[in-house]
Length: 82
Image (cartoon, rainbow, N blue to C red):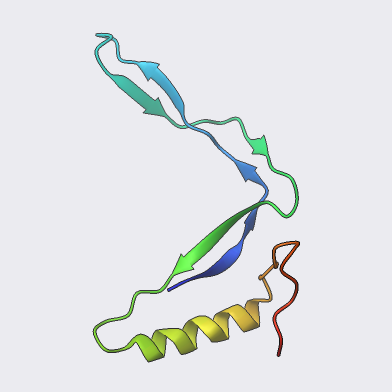
């Protein structure tokens, strides 16, 4: 079950470089942030039920989404009915 978790306003892209022996591509963390426009880049929470507990996960996910007020509908979609 994936539900909206919020938005981040900056992203850190990885930096790639060749290894000293020039045979592999290595990844290093970046310290340079890329600013993102509003509302930002969405991230999500993943709830995974155990066997035969899908109903519990649906209730938890629904309650979290309603309480967090983090859902931003797409521009052409509009709000969900109550």
